[in-house]
Length: 218
Image (cartoon, rainbow, N blue to C red):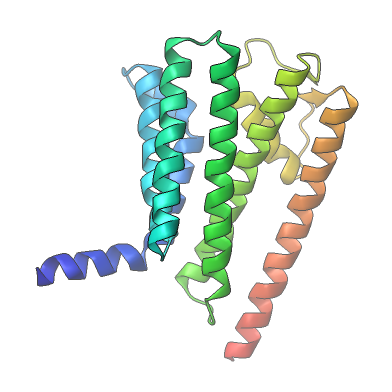
């Protein structure tokens, strides 16, 4: 029993690192599919499950954990249904909505947790980085939704997949702009502009808060 308490304390201590590694694993899903001999559906479900379980560690209250589990199970169900029937529009919409709610919930929980951190430590360093990943994933979901409303919203590369929108989301918030995917319609361009602005302000605010807390601790 004592050993289990110690292990649980270690998990709580490194919860940001665990959630961060799971989120990176989620973003590397195409790599996992390419190098493994498993079905893509298994890889996707496994990575999503890891993100849900690890991110639920961020919640300090039972209601927060319960919310992540409920929305997480709903998202996994949507993924399974989409894998079994990829042409169903209601299932696709269901997956987008549940995924958006899931990562929005993670962002709210993470933000509340970061507000309680009073000193510069491992959690304070990894927390904003995790939030940046959540922001990029939410952007990818929104870009998918824009493409759903109008299939001509983006100039996409040949052989694109749903992952392409998450890729475009991250190159938008980092303002890299390779040019291989470009927004064509006004809604797509507007969302891209918003993601560019949010990405820049996010980095500026995080750096400002980090420097401020570091100075205060000194």
